[in-house]
Image (cartoon, rainbow, N blue to C red):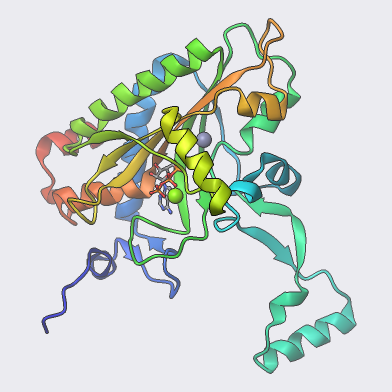
Length: 302
Ligand code: ATP
Ligand code: ZN
Ligand code: MG
């Protein structure tokens, strides 16, 4: 056989990822999870002195918040909504018959109050806005959630359900841009400490459609988004394993986040793609953690 075995195939063969029949939807082995847990403890250590408030949301969010966020304006192609059967006995019979005949039974499913979380920070802004004005020192939050994005791919680093760890800062422009710079520096140091080659570059989100191109250009021109890139499946097309986003006062205005002096809060978030980081480590150091360099093992597991 001259067919090249892909990184994804090797991950399946090693059992680190488990096939489900859907591209981008995988099970994870205990070993894979242990790497993510160890890396999250490394993040905890870097962030410990900052005193962020930890909050964990499930991977679904209030659909009303999702609608207000504007996600459907910018990224309709990526969104996921939760639908359920809401009918009576008669409708149920129809549903079963439809399935029996191999027809599309999903058209009768009705939208529930839940949308799948597209980024870990989305449920945070309305939650914090409800508390009233931020305290004088602003707000700093530690989040982690499974996120959904409808972007099926054979690239193991592009999954449909994956975890994002985030820190979110709310405060003055100076506060939140300093926060973002601090984490860019820490991010580089952190990745180096586990033997990964990193590069930081300006980036943009995949805003949908023709109008979206303008938004993407504006985001780049204003340096609103940076990515930390690491080789995972390719040395030339590197993978974004962290992102550093400055939202200016857009979320503050949208959600009514105000500072102690009454001004609108600026916000920034830094996010880690936890599966991508685990994959970067397996790609660099091998699929067996027992043969990883001693210093990397010590950084992760003490
Ligand atoms: P990309 O440009 O690769 O699509 P992104 O800009 O969409 O990434 P963000 O929206 O900034 O990514 O999300 C924060 C982090 O979540 C990314 O830096 C990345 O590490 C991770 N991430 C994003 N999309 C995926 C995905 N489909 N599968 C796994 N991890 C992802
Ligand atoms: Zn975010
Ligand atoms: Mg993307």
